Image (tube, rainbow, N blue to C red; front, side):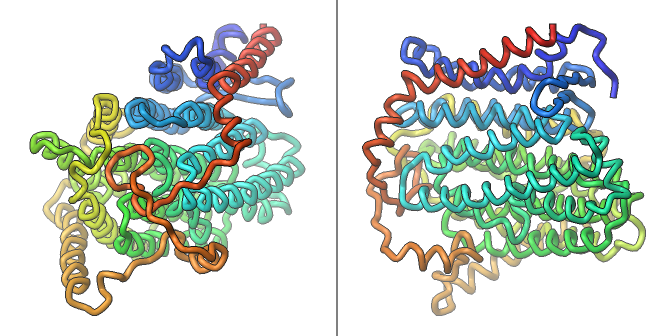
Length: 571
């Protein structure tokens, strides 16, 4: 990696400004600065600027954490690019989505903390720094999941938090063993040392579990379909679009991909990835809430990148191509899935013209996820199949067939959204349209930033057919399933409960009936129907009331102290 030919202070500010500015932005939650709160979505701009304009480089801070290193390489640039774009678009959407929410200050504080953690981990080049920012992102996201304070939100938050703690413990164990093996926490040193280390298998196991929870890999996926339906829609967009990709980046950073042959681990990942690609799509096709269906779609789509990581562990020679394919797939999926989630809260548009625009804006990223030609989804899936080594022809066919499942769950999502016109307390506003429109545009036009335009379409008639037939099969399956559900006894009631494997335990623990909620907390369509509000504890209410006065000041004060320390020591 090339070191920046600038002062240490400039390097520190370049690589840490994306993570520090969201924390400084918490100052706008202090009451005298409330009028500037519309500027909060712009906290993602420094990260976007670094991704677009900063050359590759790094800076070492041996006195920070256990010896920190921050910087950017070609792979992390792609992650930072789509991550910053998602947080920017999601923040714009959230400004309109939550404009009448009494807990919006609480939302923004957790939002900014999760954003800072997400940007920081992408720029971290050592395991300790990655762990710190990963933990900040994970625990701040809990506040986004439980924002509505409904029984379902609290329950989903408990599941999410429990898995986060398990994941953090697994990551701590993986990093400690890697440090013992390498004598360093730098990722490049760890990967090189693990090739001959007796701790290799233990590090791989703990890494797969710790980051697999965030990725939503089977069977660690159960938090996603519980969290997405209850979280505010902008939070769902970044949870599914950006934060689960942090788990993928962790895999790519810490696993010894290309350096060792680990067929047992690799084949296990391939099997789990294929199972997720098909089973999660089928589960999503039975859902009764659009956001739950999209959550299962994310589990299915992340099965593709799980397969890529498995291939890299199985055949080290294929690792560079598999890593590139997984990174490109993450870019495509992040923008398309973010656009679909934000589109859920726009389903309440009532005018014919606006509804036509909305339907088109939802259909285009859905086609991309299904891998339709002329979309980034086609190019990303083609790159993934091209990365498969010789002898993996059956896996290539399975990945092509999985597109039929994606088509099925996308059609189910569209069906669930079809009747939501005019269902909200207030209709979509300009900020909501702006955030959603930005992501739709990026999902359609953003591919040239990371790949070749020529990769967006098949080159021969045979390749065109192989790209289209899974989509047609998915549409045919959707028609057959719809007909069966109408005619079969109990067909309309068939549904995989969100949380699937965890559902029986949750039902046993719940031991109570749902109480219908008369109106959704933010009034955006019927996405939160059938939820009931949990009475807020007095202490929790006082804490939330104090956030505008003290929370933003405290977070910004911590950021200011850290920035002063960094500049003083780097200068």
